[in-house]
Image (cartoon, rainbow, N blue to C red):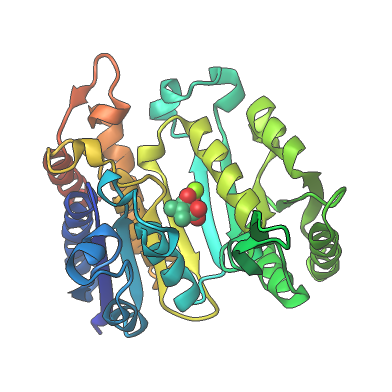
Length: 362
Ligand code: IPM
Ligand code: MG
């Protein structure tokens, strides 16, 4: 029987519309192969939403997302909106989407594709074979803790405040997600905190230890975040799955992404207790190349694959899309950002066409 899914597309800003249209074509092609049916609906977010409605996340968009099986987001932001105050910036739309849909678990894989090993700024022997999954807590910690704001002290001086806070239950649920992901990977989980200084991290460490007792098959380790940052660059292959809070995860996932040297290739998934999840590339909106048919659509396409695997439980369709990506890279096709000598450079649309051909052959 045909399986129907309603998907909300949020193209956002910059290269967003170009790359999401490639991913939609791939999903359509996968649909006919796997007896799926898509109902796509489109919403405004980020700068595009600010321009039309004055708000980075109009309530209509959040409603559309809530009434769908999954959300595919491209990218938000750009210089046009950089001057706006915090709560009206495009980024506020993204944060509102995460909290509005209670997407507490952010999965950021950083896998070094052998075809792109030369793209990494690190030595080949350090990075070859790197395959890390960063599980970042996404709706708590210092990003959302209260109090927050810029206040006046008694002497009339301004004082900026954010609060890093986690409840035990917030830690427990992200720990479970990470432990379950580690079970499907190599069975090693490294929890990253700052427990030598921060109370919130002491609780984090205690709870992760406690929850991990139910997962005797997982080897759990702990690192302080400064050391983890260093180890990620020094010897990244020691890591399998990493679990950490919102801010540390923001920083460490950028480091992990850079190990692969090709941020234009990395997808991500943000999941809650129930549907819908949000699936988006790790990279930004690249306003400098927007509308020029130069963008790399592969992270968006791999995000669509993550949507099929983690959001819709269609792992076979996900694998075929991932194999199609591998096949075009093996065939030597590259977009500008991952171009190297001897390869054939393609624009965004042409890359999409090569992917469709490769998917048809799976
Ligand atoms: C990310 C980004 C966001 C974050 C910004 C754009 C709000 O850096 O997804 O990593 O800090 O979470
Ligand atoms: Mg970030």
